[in-house]
Length: 322
Image (tube, rainbow, N blue to C red; front, side, top):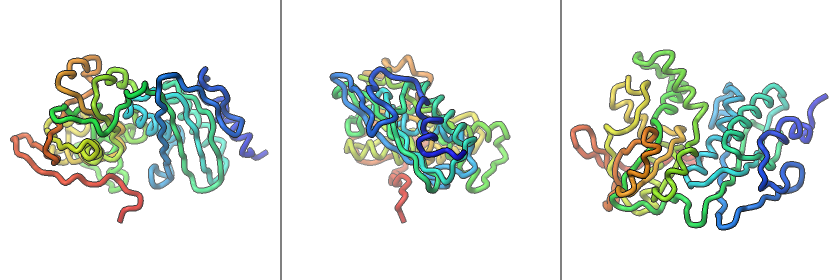
């Protein structure tokens, strides 16, 4: 017997995640009823992933379930919010139970890891797309914002940059530099399809970060959002860009362009006053200082010789751009 919309939800999603005490009423009614803690603000974000736009049609459904939630968890991390609840709107071309089982398992594993509960959503028929709205808590006036960077703040990023972009270029352009091995490509593909949201850094960053953003469209494009909102500029040291072992095998110019411009890394970019850098010691092995915020409203790249290159920040990926 074919699954109905409601039996599909019941079988694959109703008991998907751990139960939270602040969920008064979850899946199964017209709305969820959720209890917000006192003296906290609610951080809300939504992302939609569309087949052949955000992921390939042949992607493994388990990794797609993971990535669908990971990109939204990354937004909560960028705001300094603790994950709490999420909703899922799933558009399917057909009911494929094997696909649903793998997708829901990948989604559930990451949700349980971050103690975030699925509290509602919708399913419908159509071209494959996934929309997830996440909700998290942040203490009043403690959210990381894009408009609070100050001149003299140091610029940090988490992890390594450009890996997902390299995997995407390999897939789209059949780009296969001789320097990279099969193991390198496996690693880069993993970085593209299974990004790690950096929510584990938030506790250390609280009280030390002046501005933050997650890197979804590329370092320069996303950093430019901070600079625009804060009305500031920046100097970036190219030789301080954190590169994976795979990308360090490439010519420096090629690797640095990937690190600067590639999206889908879902690392954090954040600014910290020089007086507070020592407070980041617990996460020092997970972050890199790559530059400094300046009063001059320009984004400057400084190469290994100390030469400056003014950079006109490109726009991030625009679904409706020319």
